Structure formats: structure tokens, C-alpha cells
Amino acid sequence: MIEFSEEGKRRYQTILSHYPDKRAALLPVLTLAQREFGWISQEVAEYIGKLMSYPPSDVLSVATFYTMLHKKPAGKHHIDICKNVSCWLMGVYPCIDEIKRQLGVEKREVTADGKFSWDVTECLGSCGTAPAMQVGDRYYENLTPARVAEIIEKLRND
Amino acid sequence: MTRILLANIDKPEQASIVKYRERGGYKALEKALAMDQAAVIEEVKASGLRGRGGAGFPTGMKWSFVPRNTGKPTYLLCNADESEPGTFKDRILMERDPHMMIEGMAIASYALNCHLAYIYIRGEYEFVANMVQKALDEAYEAKMLGPSVMGKDFALDIFVHLGQGAYICGEETSLIESLEGDRGYPRIKPPFPATHGFLASPTVVNNVETLCALPWIIQNGAAAYAAIGTEKSKGTKLFSVSGHVSKPGVYEVDLGYPLVDFINNEAGGVPNGRKLKAVIPGGSSVPVMTAAECPGVLLDYESLLKAGSMLGSGGMIVLDETTSMPETLSVIADFYAHESCGQCTPCREGTGWAAKILKNIVAGKGKRSDVDLLLKIADMMEGKTICPLADADVMPIRSFVTKFRSEFEALCGDN
Ligand SMILES: Cc1cc2nc3c(=O)[nH]c(=O)nc-3n(C[C@H](O)[C@H](O)[C@H](O)COP(=O)(O)O)c2cc1C
Ligand code: SF4
Ligand code: FES
Image (cartoon, chains in turn red, purple):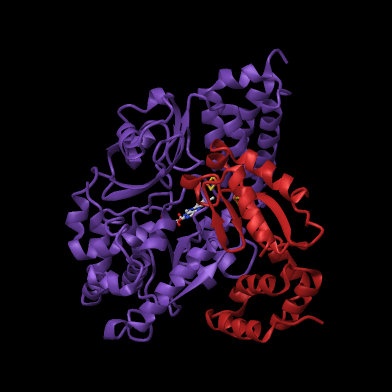
């Protein structure tokens, strides 16, 4: 049986206190769950469902609507790189190739050491500093293949 | 040119409440709190401020649709979902001057008699949300928020709510569904959020930039704001410009500023000695304009509409002569296919088919009849869906295909 850490339990109570209706807390609670457990598995859905008294299927049906909630395990560092217009115009594809070369896995796969996974994503709101990617809660902008290699190298040693 | 939204954007530590107040911050809130709630709404009406989230609906009028004394609370939702490709203007406001948004929200909340407000921020902007949270904490500490705002008999709580990756949640009814803890399926309107919004209560959804204009309007008066801009497009507007320009970034201009001057002066023109080919003036969902269509066009709601496009969110994407228009459209169509929530058949099927056909064309496997098929799909989608996302795909498809048809046909060869 999984459960939130002590800090997670405190966070959970704080989240509930922000809404006049318990249901409104579901998305932030799922976000918290992903932070605690890495991804939204059936087990996580059952735990959240029990905690908030919703059927796990209901919890999963909400989770599957949102692309940032992982429905399968992700790497410790998950890279989302933007392929929308401005990033494409500014040369994101060579950067994507570099990610593939560096990690040796296809998108949505996890590296053997569990450290990395990656995916392409839509506009990140960094079009003026394109190409851009997101890793965890950080943005990396004005990318070049060389910079991508550097960033991955740093994260590898992290 | 007047600077209202970006006046202090480059000043040191503007994000801290101390600096914000030193530079005149929260004076407008103090002034608003001394006014009648109805008078604040009248002031905003008279300013001519229109929603900066994309639709351009008059803000004061929207507020006046909110019924009073329904026995239910009224909610204000700040739309910081900013996901329209090409748009990155709300982010800079929240990163560098978050108290302006908070003060704007407090003024709006007072006018609407709202005591609980949320800022719905796209999940990718978690680092921005952290900065906003820090500013909120400061505002509580300084009693700009809480049980007694600035010592007055007015309570207001503001919370940050993070999205988790869904473009559609920027649409106001989808945002409300998402905030209620459900899949972000847009609702059929009416009823409108003004009467049946968050938790079936009266609700106003306003864009970050809209709310940020409020402190200036209250402080300087509606007439001063209405003196800027054109007859129907009042005030200043942020444009985030990207793509093939020398100086991409966010710029504030008076509405009615010439488009060509904006590209050449503010954005530094098209680099590498290349020629301008096309401009998407207001985010990826508005019709594309050819370079030949740009001269004489002004950056305001009416002028852009007359020119066959739209002001939208002000997310301008500039394309130089080397750009393949079918490839650009293919990238855009992929986006809408990915982001369709799937509720309406014409949108779910249409966005998917358009994306597939375009991929084929770009790969050199298309037929000439596919070009007309794209237009047919556009007709099939337009105006037949719950929310405007389908139309947001129709506008680029139709404009790209009709204005650059030969490029599409050339890729199809003799097929
Ligand atoms: C598909 C779609 C996406 C939208 N995305 C956003 C958005 O990211 N941010 C925003 O402020 N408005 C967005 N809107 C517009 C909102 O529905 C709404 O009109 C706006 O938030 C109202 O605020 P305003 O009156 O201040 O402009 C979107 C609309 C549609 C149809
Ligand atoms: S138009 Fe598309 S995005 Fe909008 S409600 Fe229908 S299916 Fe969903
Ligand atoms: S297009 Fe990549 S961040 Fe906007």
C-alpha cells in the first residue's frame, strides 16, 4: 500500500482548504501525487480515490485528460521539447535528434538507468526564446544541439 | 507611446511588494475601495477596455452581466492558461510585475463583490506560479488580501490553481470544468459563466493582461485610457512576436499602431536580408496574412478584422520568404488535432483528418484533390461545434490554402 509522505499529507490538507468544494482539489491532488509517486498508476488512482472517496476509474478518467500527468513511468528527469511553429522555425528538430542521440531511447521510453524520458510537446510560451524545452519545473530556452548535450550531461550527474 | 503594462517591467525588483508600492502600487486599489462598487464597473466600462484573452469582449460590460444578490458567491477567475501558440505575454507580466495582476484582481473582485478568486496557471508555468505565490504571500502579509483588504470591510482570498497540460483549458468553460476537478470539456453556452460558472455560481473569467490594465485605469481615470488607441480599440496592447524577426519579445503599443512599423521597428525587422513572406498576427488560430496584405493595416481589433484576420491574443508569428507554408500549416494542424477534446464529432474527426492530409502533402504523397478536400473539411467543421477550437483550426487551414495554394499544389506534383 502506498501513501503520501508526512509532507505530502500536510500539502494535501492545505490544498483541500483552498476550495469550497472538495472535488475542485482533485487536479492539484493528482499533481501532488505525481510529485510523490512519479506517475499516476492504477495503485495511485486507487489511493487518491480512497482518500477523496471517488471511484478509481473516475480519478483515472480525469488524469488521462491532462498530458502533464504521466500514465506510465517517466524518467527521473522528463524532458518535454516544444515542436510548435516558432520552435520549429528556429530549428528544434536538430535539438530533438540530439536528445535521441544522447539518451538512446525513443519518445515516451525511459532510459535503462531510469534517469531520463522525453517527449515532444506543444507551445510552452517561450516562442520568443525558441527553441525551448521543459525539464521538471525548469525551462531551457534558445536551445542548440550543443546546449541540449550540455544540459543532459549536467542532469546525468545530478 | 504610452506604457501602461510594461512601464516598470525592467525596473529592479519590481516583483517585490516593497518596490511595487514605492512605484505607486496598490494606490489604485485604495482608490477603488473608496468608490462604490458600481462606480468601479462604470469606470471600467467608460475606459473601453476589452478582453485581452483573444475575444476582445468589453470588460465592463461583461462584469455588468453578473447578477447581484443571487444568494450564491461570485467568483473571479484569472485566466493564465496562455497556451495559444505564439503567445507569451502573460508570462512576462506574472514573472516581472505580479503585483500588478494581484492589484487588478483585487479591484475586479471588489467591483464584482467577489471574495474568492483563483489564478488558473498552465502547469508548464510552475516556476511562474511559484513567483506569483510569493507575491500573493507578500500581499497577504501587507494586508492587501485577506479578511480585511487595506483595513476595509472587504475580504478577499486569491489562490493559484495549476493546470496540467491541456490547451483547451484556456477556453473559459473548459477552465471552469477543469477547476471543478473534471476533464476540461467545454460547456454549451448559454448558460454563460456570468450566471452559471464555477460551482454553478456567477463567475467572471478574465485574462491576465486585462486584469493588469485595471490599476492604471482606476488611478488615471477612464478618460485617460480611452484617449489612447482608436475609436473602438482603446488603450494599449501587448504583442508577443516570434519567428523570423531580429528582436523577438513582448512589446506594448497603442492600439492602432501600424503592423509594418511594429515588425520593422519594435521587432527589428526580418533578419538575414530576407524578405517578409507572411504574418500570423494574433496567435496560431487567426488567419494568416501575406506580406502584400500588411501595408496600411493597423494593430487594432477592427483594422485586423477588415484585413481578413484577427487580433486574437496578440501572439504574432513572422514568416520569412524561405518558409514552407504547407509545412507551417501542417505544424499548426497537428496542434489542433492533438488539443481537440474530442467531444464534438466535426472537431475530433476534422482536426484529425486535416492533420493527416497535410502530413501526406508535406511528405510529397498528396493528391491535388486533397487541397480541395482540406477546404471541404474546413467547411464541415466551421460553426458546428460546442467551442471555437474547431474554428481555430478552420481559420489557418482556409487562409493558408487559399492564399498559398500553388505551394500546396506544387508538393502534390501531378498526383
Ligand atoms: C480554444 C480556446 C483557448 C483559449 N485560451 C485562452 C488562454 O490561454 N488565455 C486566455 O486568457 N483566454 C483564452 N481563451 C479565451 C477565453 O475563453 C476567454 O474568452 C477569456 O479568458 C476571457 O478573458 P478576457 O475577457 O479578459 O479576454 C481561449 C478561448 C478558446 C476558444
Ligand atoms: S470544438 Fe473541439 S475542442 Fe471544442 S468542445 Fe468540441 S471537440 Fe472539444
Ligand atoms: S512555439 Fe515553442 S514555445 Fe511557443
